[in-house]
Image (cartoon, rainbow, N blue to C red):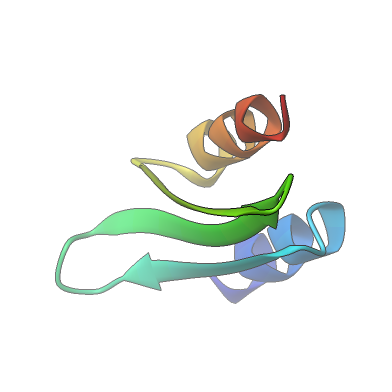
Length: 56
């Protein structure tokens, strides 16, 4: 899990990424275009896709 967090945060330096132990989901809080976006996904790859979409 730690490796996925590091990889995503390097790819998206404007984001904080974590795995929710209670929700069993991947989460990211990122600032893009002067707004904050909270994203969630089932896998790190899905989260990366959502983060890319959030960038517009």
